[in-house]
Image (cartoon, rainbow, N blue to C red; front, side):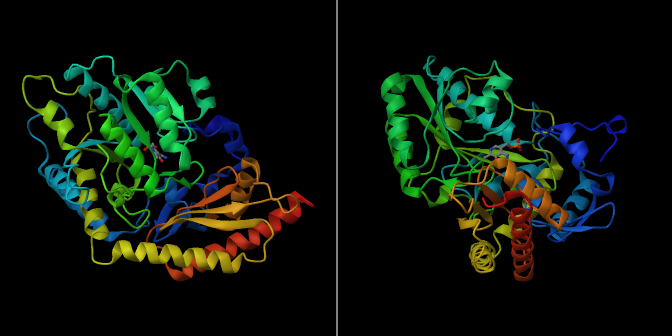
Length: 434
Ligand code: PMP
């Protein structure tokens, strides 16, 4: 229990009353070490959520820390906003990052958050239309259940009706469609209804972070083909899936034709600096970068292209692109799945483990009727896991497991063991015959 009168931070989406009632000042984090976060009381938690899915290389990644320390001594601040002196390290980082992305996506815009960059993607798509004489082309198609961040456009893109109602008025030119195997038909349905000349972009998460549902590569490829034939921009939101999480730089690299824009965040700096990027394809850049558009795309913030973020990003790239690293993530992800399946095989509440790399989801089902656990039960299981030294996320019917990409085999076994015993105890105490 935390005293409300002495606690002044107000956290993101967290209901503060609940947080204050369920927490204790001892739980404030003060340190970290590999896959473990350490709190004020000295308790160590195996962090199977990588903080907010972003601490992909654990808490003591020396090469990233060293690069940031060096950068702090050399040039501690800088910007790419309205300035002809970009930090050299930022220019180097843009080139190094572009070299890891599909070859047409060579233009890197910098920001601090995924939300900032999904909004930038939508606005850039519309700006491109304005500048090329297609003024009315402003509709964006997004997917039900998706998450693209906060802000008037990012929230509008996010496919959660309740968030739209709570935050209204938002951008009203977004249309939501079904995802998964229905994506192509659903996009085509909207384009037929509105006319392609109204639709500027489609934004998709290759794996929906909210429910951990993946769109198949075939489905994504078909949507890209469909959109390209109609000059509709495709934006891949890879804030969660990118930068190594699925054992690849991006899911987009597996597609026969790349998207027009890719948003990356979270893992690009391994969470050591607020950094997100928007990679943009040649035709959009080429249409906007040269005169007569003297003003350029009117979008950006003071700390965009910050040298500390670029230094962190370069050091992260060195690790991700080292021989065998990403293959290793896929192998360890399979190993973690196997360990979870073995350890939890006899638990009647556990369904399958789905996902790839270190983007996994453990399905939880009530044993009496096989229906998915409510988000409330998964949330309370998460608190019980925390009390047993394991940090996880929660979602509807599924417990997302996104540990650092560097988690060891022993830590995978520890993760599965804590989960197993916690599910058993939680079910016995709270679920009765369910
Ligand atoms: N897009 C996706 C797919 C995300 O997972 C997130 C963050 N969870 C965002 C956008 C927003 O990123 P941020 O929280 O950095 O604003």
